[in-house]
Each structure stands twice: as structure tokens, then as C-alpha cells.
Image 1 (tube, one colour):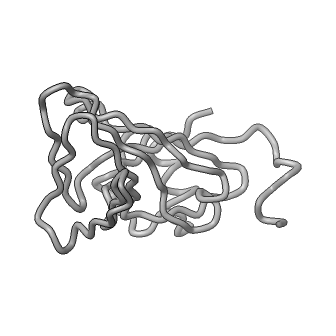
Image 2 (spheres, rainbow, N blue to C red):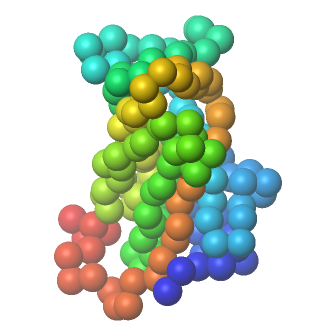
Length: 149
């Protein structure tokens, strides 16, 4: 079952499961996430968005990014990451490498971005809203919980 905004607040945010937590990023059933500081291009070049104004992702280019936020979810909650629809309409598609371990360990979410548009570059900047997490209850305590590893 998908968590509502007040469930996300009481079960995740209030328990320091999202850092930093900003109330304005909470929506009825999702929490919006922002583009973090570091990008890695397909050629291995590291980009620090705090040292450049923006980064232009040209058509066909691919990179690895992370969120500003870190996550540490309770055992019975998981989440699914999706790129914002406004960015998808521009041709930006993302492949999530979000793992249960990342969601439960207090780490950043890492994801791949690719500009699939044929002619339009996409400008990325530190802190922009890039995706959303939908939180869900697990039906039962997992046998292979990451908390016991």
C-alpha cells in the first residue's frame, strides 16, 4: 500500500529517514528529491555542480547523478524512484539504481540520466527537483532484512 503524505511524515520524515527534510517537497503520496552536487559523465569526468553554474546534458549524453537527500527507511517501508514528468517531457529519462540497501542505510540515491531528445539540450543545476519517491508498506517483515546484516 502506498503511503500518504501524513504517513510519509510520521513514519519516515519524523524519524529522520529523510535528511534534509523540507515540508514543501512533500506531496499527497510522494516526496520530491533534488539533484545533488556531483555528476559523473559517461567518460568518467566528475562534475561538481557547486563549482559550475549549470551542466548541459546534450542529446544522447548519459551521466550518473545522486540526490541531495539521504534516506534511512524503516524495515517495513520501501520506495520507488521516478524522474519528474516535466523532465521526461523534455527527453530526460532516468534509470534508477536505487537499492534496498541505499534506502535503509542512510545513503544518497544514485541514478542514471540520459537525454533522449534529438535536438534539445537539458540544463541541470544543483538543487533542482529531479525526481520523486513513492513510499510503500511491505506486507510483512522481510526474512532477509538489511538491519540484521
